[in-house]
Image 1: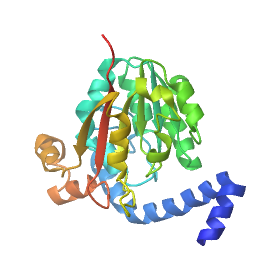
Image 2: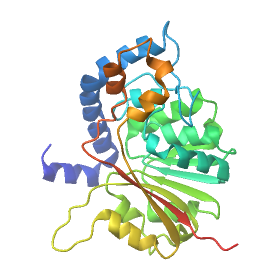
Image 3: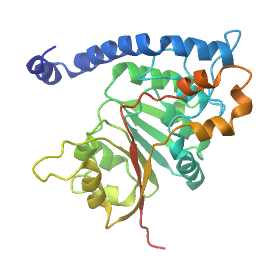
Image 4: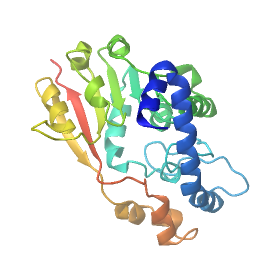
Length: 275
């Protein structure tokens, strides 16, 4: 599909466009990750057991056994984005009334936070129709359907309406964060805590990077902590007893690979509230 046709499809039939995009991506993901997924399942979930997260803050969460957006094995292992484990634990302890997960994929965080938090209402958004169906199934699988609501596009108006004084926003939207997370258009962002996965912005002619621009927007109202991805050597050592008798070190390390193209940056953005 050439560029002009894609743009036309996005305007005229956005749902069909996203379904087509999702279907094509999953065919690629299936070819790329199916073998590793099967080996992991055979090693850790014998006799057709329902997969569940093995470690981390979402340990024990039942999980899907199908093709998702990207590799599923890091989520089964509980090593997915383990750079953020302590933040996720803080979020659970804080007791947010609402969690807004923009770019929820199949629901790893939306359902996980519904389980470990103090019964928050979770509003999950994703443009991908297949991901939305999977997120709803994952919520049912874990008995939290009544607290996890799944939608398509999240607009400035939607986000502003959803934010209360105790709202946490988790955003992973492949670069669109620069458009959506704008306090000038979403004034209530100044009261929310946010965890933002930052994606590369084309930097040319003096244009600031996505990270710099987002940091600039929230520097006056929030404290900002930067996290950067690292390898999984520490995870392998800490969970040695989990995998040592089941798979080789090389196989386990491959199962933990999140298939990122490079280093990942997150911003943990917390509102400065008056006592």
